[in-house]
Image (cartoon, rainbow, N blue to C red; front, side, top):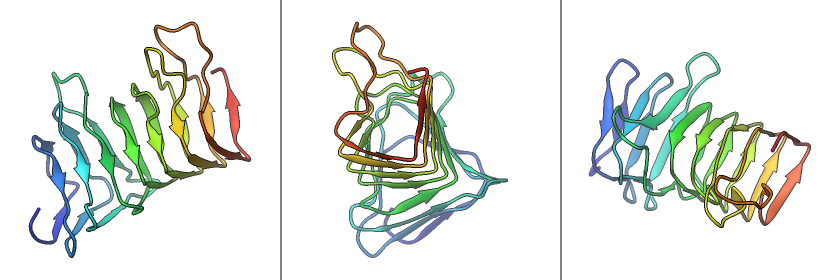
Length: 173
């Protein structure tokens, strides 16, 4: 992205190449917008700005494109905040992201949240696999519901990794 861009809810977006938002550029994703990601792409702010604020009635959706496995590169939002976003059916790692009122459903990535803050989010059906035993690294979780997550292909228990929890509901993991 070379200049400010706004994505609208009435347009179908299939992301086929990694999106980079450079310094001085703003990517605005309006409430109700759906972004479907092809495999092996990502979204980086690279010192640019991201306005990604859905509403309870019209969340923004990040998901895989049809006939894709959902294997996506890292999303690094450089401490930009996203709110009311539904992230589902992807294998993706989030770095330096501030989440508020988001739904994270069926993420298949070990340590999916790195150096991130999550407030009032629902994290369900995440299934990191292999020898990795958690979904976060140095992240903060406040008033989140962390339910029904499991390790696939491992006899180890599900853990959150290094990070802090405050006022969270954690069960059936």
